Image (cartoon, rainbow, N blue to C red; front, side):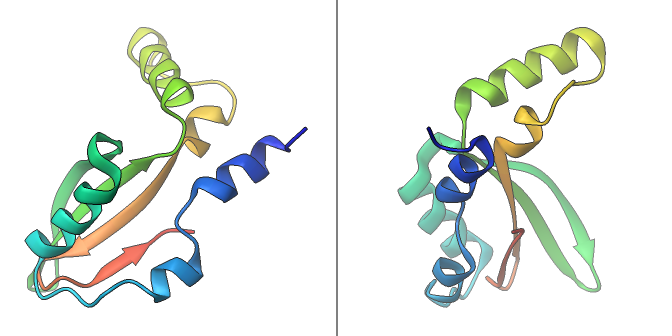
Length: 104
């Protein structure tokens, strides 16, 4: 049986994969790249300014079932118990200049 944490590690974008990403010239170009690969599992959550550049924050849903269950629990109770919900996504930031940072 696969360790639950290992399951999420296998689905995440690794540091190696991040290092091999193409260079993007804009947020739109990077967003399209990830949307083409991950479809609706790649979702924007917020945007904010960092210095003079706009930063777009996204999640990559790794486990749709755990993510949906956690969202429902959050809506109902205002909080989520356990770690499945928090492990069910990976956070990515894309700057308006196309630079990408992936949380590991």
